[in-house]
Image (cartoon, rainbow, N blue to C red; front, side):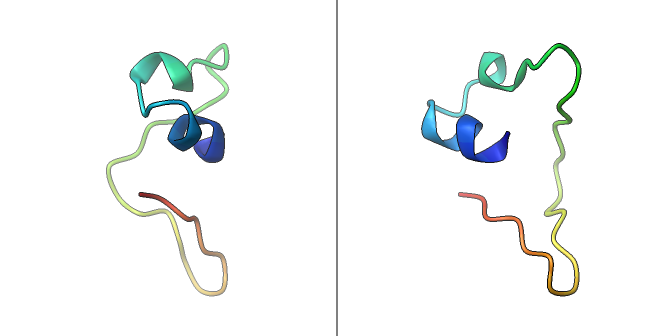
Amino acid sequence: MNLYYQANGRNYWNCNFKNSGLIVITNPSYGNCYYDYK
């Protein structure tokens, strides 16, 4: 979902997956699990 959001203009409507997505204000990466964001 994040890749779709980043690739499509970073608009709030690009994150509407019928409430299956979650908007966060902190980086969710931890340990070896890295979420790329821009």
